[in-house]
Image 1 (cartoon, rainbow, N blue to C red):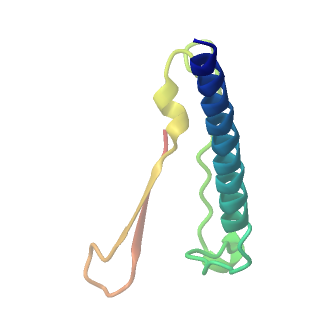
Image 2: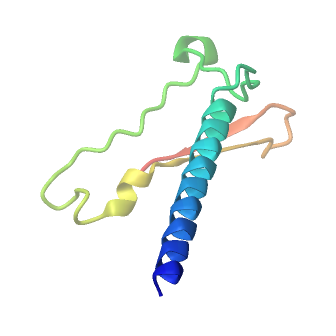
Length: 98
């Protein structure tokens, strides 16, 4: 009976030690992968409204009737559509606001 308890305790101690090593190894691996030095290519570049000729701002003025509690969908933002809708070979921009 004493032998079984000792064996169980030893197996439990070894498995806990092994789990700790595996956890630390995985943590080091993920931290190292997250700190990679390669730069990702940017998809968009911010430009001023004076350079683009577009001056649009989706301003939300909170009131007692319109706020985050009464309408949370207001804060999800508007939309922008780009396409050549009138076939003049120029991009047409459509903005929606809340």
